[in-house]
Length: 174
Image (cartoon, rainbow, N blue to C red; front, side):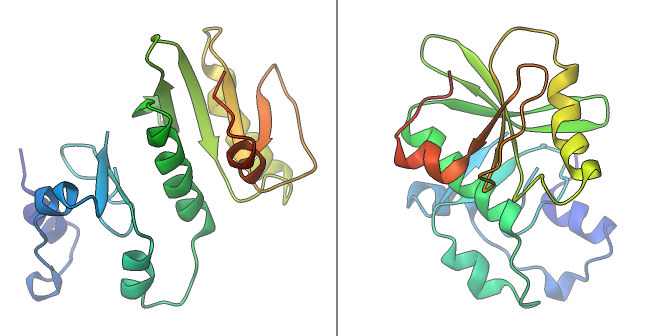
């Protein structure tokens, strides 16, 4: 098993550009929260296949040097924090080459599948991409595509939900 540093070096990142951060220390101070493919700032595949979500998005913006806002990543972060505040266990699932953003499990062991995107109304390709994975899951647990859209699409029983409304209404994933 490779260390994170070895993984970064394999990806072509020069050693002098690697900032060493004690992730456990950050977690203990509630600055970031871990979950089962994201490094501290951007998604990065590492051998442990974990995602890290920042409890304070200010860290991301302080270190984001390209001046591009990645809304989908921010929305994933927000939804992660919301789900954790509702006592959901969260993992990432892979079906073939597709990754499900979140597989949520409540305290009663009920599951929900969640895909997160800024918008799915931009193109048919975007809409298909977000629904495709959830359509391939053959169980009867609830499935959601979460966006900032207010024009909703419904397909094969998959719910399209506005993230802001979900949070404002203090809704569960059921």
